[in-house]
Amino acid sequence: MNRILFTQVWNERRSNSWLWIELLLVYVVLCFVIDMCYVDLRTFFEPKGHDISNTYMIQVNTLPPIILIIRYRQEKDNRRARLT
Image 1 (cartoon, one colour):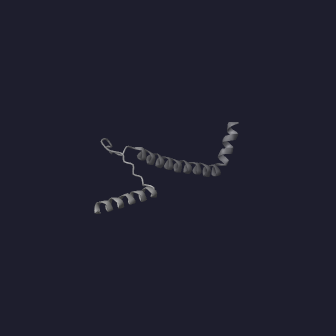
Image 2 (cartoon, helix red, strand yellow; image 1 turned 60 degrees about the vertical axis):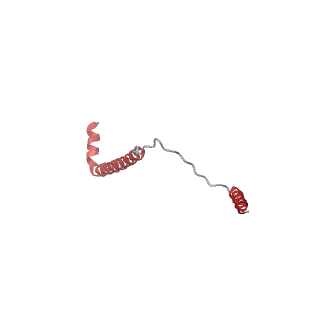
Image 3 (cartoon, one colour; image 1 turned 120 degrees about the vertical axis):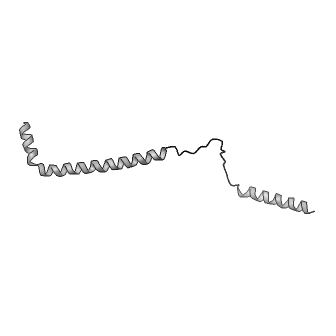
């Protein structure tokens, strides 16, 4: 039985060789892509070396327009009061 299978594989070696070449090419490309992704992810998650101790976290927002109008009017009234 093994001899028959070996003979059949040997007779089809030309088509089998293209199959093995294709598998080798796919393997090489996959290794390259996986290695590239691994290196990129490893460098992305690596600590950058910044020391963030003794620092402040500041959050800056914008005021809604109505508050700006009220403040403008208050400042205008304050200026008028100082002039008189």
